[in-house]
Image (cartoon, rainbow, N blue to C red; front, side, top):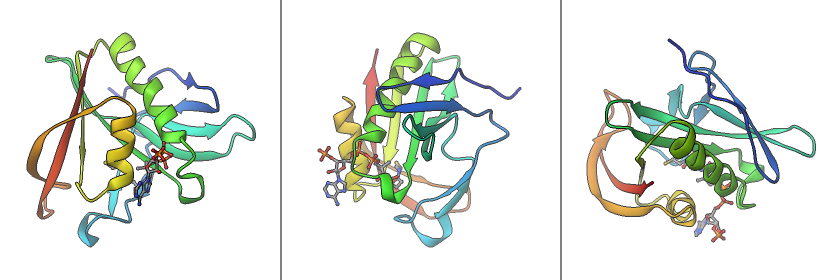
Length: 153
Ligand SMILES: CC(C)(COP(=O)(O)OP(=O)(O)OC[C@H]1O[C@@H](n2cnc3c(N)ncnc32)[C@H](O)[C@@H]1OP(=O)(O)O)[C@@H](O)C(=O)NCCC(=O)NCCS
């Protein structure tokens, strides 16, 4: 069953909900070539500016373990709109919805250690680096080192 969360609102953004079947494809330009295009990531919400409804990014839960009540966030912001605090603003609302609306007890994020903007955003929303892990971006992709960030309810 596709999951469609409610739309959310922040000070400067509308977070418009998407269901699992209508997720856009985004290009992660700072990832290795064979993992740049990830269909369906990230999921759930398109961030649109309140002032003109311009879509500027996407964020949401790329994994939801309903037995353990653990979620994992993914996020991307279009280039011209970066470094204006938009993703920090969006993710604060998405974490809040995760804890209160989805009943999560733990939210995770994985980032490449060299992705300084991503690491900074995770720190700004109160997530703490737990440990370094090794994994893949896609099932056939290369093994990469990631930093695992966590925040609990
Ligand atoms: C990560 C990303 C979503 C951040 O979105 P954003 O809206 O620009 O985030 P914010 O404006 O809320 O915060 C960005 C922070 O990173 C900092 N930053 C950005 N580039 C930086 C750099 N090269 N060196 C140091 N800090 C940097 C900004 O200064 C800002 O921190 P500050 O508020 O303390 O000044 C965006 O850069 C992006 O889409 N990147 C590509 C996709 C991606 O990597 N997604 C995450 C996968 S885990």
